[in-house]
Each structure stands twice: as C-alpha cells, then as structure tokens.
Image 1 (cartoon, rainbow, N blue to C red):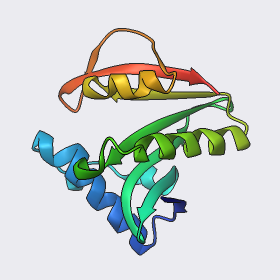
Image 2 (image 1 turned 30 degrees about the vertical axis):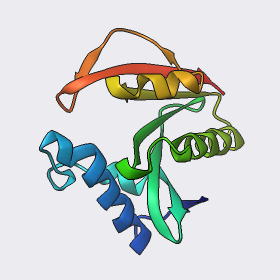
Image 3 (image 1 turned 60 degrees about the horizontal axis):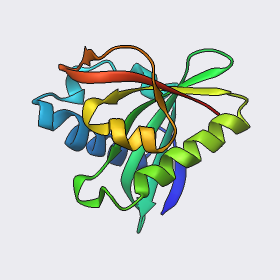
Image 4 (image 1 turned 30 degrees about the horizontal axis):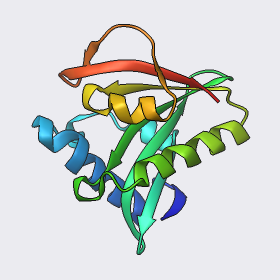
Length: 142
C-alpha cells in the first residue's frame, strides 16, 4: 500500500470523502454533507492507496504542541483485517513523531477498541456517545 498526504483541493480528497461517507456515516444513517468539514482543510489527511485508489484514510488534528488527535480513521469493509489500517496508523505515528508530537489521542468506536489496544493505545476515561454510538478516549505516548 502506498501512503500519501492528501491535499483537500485534489481528486484524492474526494476519494477520502467517499470512503469516510461509506464506512463512517452511511451505516449510522448520517452524511458528511450535513457536517462542518472545515477541519479537513487544516488537518493532515493521510490515505492508503492500492492501485492508485484510496482504500484507507485518517486525519491528524493538532491539539497542542505535544498532542495530536487521530480522527476519521476508515478502511473499506471488504479490505479490513488485512493490516492496511495498522500500516496507515503506524505511518501516522511516524509522521506525528517527525513533527514533534509526543502523544496521539483518539476517540475509538467501541467496535474498534481491540484494534487500537493491539497497537498499544490505552483507554482513558469512561464510555461516551459520539455520533450516537459508544466511543472511548484513547491515547498513546509516541
């Protein structure tokens, strides 16, 4: 898988949008079209490409000089379980470290807890609802 940083003014961004819509919003009966996407233009968008097509994505949102938030992580359903998400998160951690961040935080859907725990993220706090479903705050020292 090729991993790239995506400029939100390119065709690849539309593919990232489509992936997020398909995996993260449609199953909840929601749409990104109804959300404030302004952070998409300031966050770092990373994508995993297979044969030039976006198959995985995530965004990095600075929270402080030391902490960055991983958000909007998605891999197409039919490709999950092949290590693509793990590869993309590892690349995001390297990029964050290169940029001077020392901690990565995220809000994990309950169904993704095992994935993030396997990558040494720790739950911090109690379950909470986000986009109408259970989530947990997690973090990892980089």
